[in-house]
Image (tube, rainbow, N blue to C red; front, top):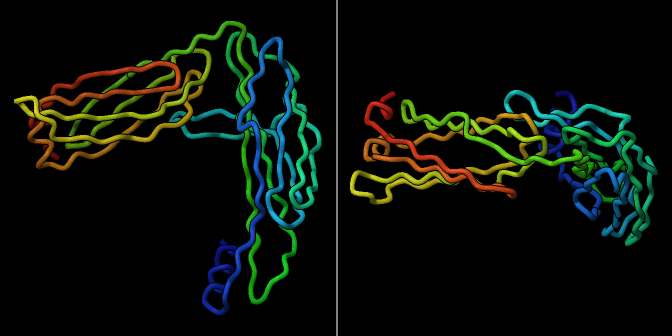
Length: 245
């Protein structure tokens, strides 16, 4: 809180210049299996100033609510750990895994983070550290990608959907589309919820509210889930009692 307060005071008393490096990372993800246990990530300094970077490896899991959790790990081998790039220069980071996955996918992120340095300029200045996390997936010997809708409900005008990854590897939820129809089959409600990675064995709750006047018109609510690997759908019959707070 102290650092935040300091920045806030500077905003009130002086013109503030924000500085951050510009770098590009390719590829934006790595996949390892029993045959390919290593790879490279290329970092390009697209700015006009020298760029200092540090790399950190984290195991990537998700908690009971589907939120990302990162913990430092030594299961990834990477070099270098510190890097300096002159303007427009590019360099590579070599990455490998110590123990490959067998029955369940292993997931990590390699964080590439700018080390802020002194910047020339007039007035107050704040350095912003840019950080990018490269997803790294170590595939199991036999990949089984699947998911299921564990629960779908509408109560008090609040829609809730619980989606679970029941396979042994991740998938990406690209979109969750809700379509509500009235008693004569006319569309009266439509909404799209954003998705994210869903790791193996993890469930995530998606929710949204439906305005009471629209909710009372609904007869059915259709859900279509699109992932990068498969699609799921479900229909819910709606009764007026589901719209009452």
